[in-house]
Amino acid sequence: MDFNGDIVLHQLVEKLGLRSQIKQAEDFEELAKVMQNAYFVISTFNNERLIRQSGAFLLSGSINIQLNKSDYGVSRIEKSSCSLNSQFASERIIIPAGSKESLLEELNFYNINQGALFPELEHQMAYIKYSMCKSNVRSASSFEKIDFDAIKAEESKERVEIAESVVKEELVDKAIYDIVSQYISDDAIKQNVLRIITRQTEYIDWANKEATISDLRRKIKRSLSLQSISSDVATQSARNMVSQLVNLYVKK
Image 1 (cartoon, helix red, strand yellow):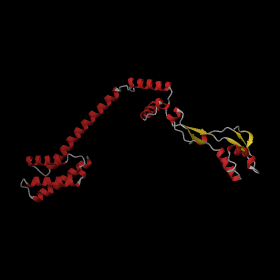
Image 2: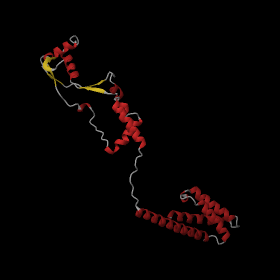
Image 3: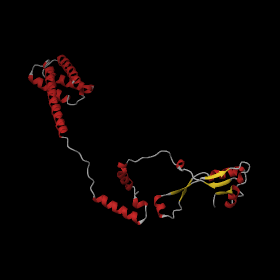
């Protein structure tokens, strides 16, 4: 049927065999809407490429209707051209050129590739050649120039940090020794208490845990009590020592 402007809606209805269904003005309105819409038409799947690509056709409804308001049936119809962009989402997905290879590899993992989508022999051969070359060629790693100055600077920084850490630990050990010495003069008892403190304070956040602090007080008190020190003195000494130790580690 040639829509060259010489055919009217009545004639179209007649040719389509729809005279019994389209009689009223409302019926012609519905027909006009159908004619001026676009439709995706699924293939009958007799084409191998369309079968592989799950393709469809876009049937454009770009038909002008010169509407005759007094009688819709004599409205003339003719072919026209239009943009089909409005039939698709306005968003655009832009894939960077540098991502092409990685994207193709990911699609290939799901069997979406040149060999699967195009049945023609040249495409099949091209895909086989591409796959063989891909498997035999080892991709080169990115070039990285050694920055010896940066390496030396990092090593120097690490040495300084280690030295500072050693000095800091030595200062802390001396501070702990001084705290214990305030309450204990006997070297044997002092060394025993220092061992208890070392074991109890090996965890970084011990000074923030009340259970650990209480356990430290209890063990120091018991150690002092075993050395014939009175319970009151042992309790007070343990309390004072632990209090000073907590302050020391919190400041640390």
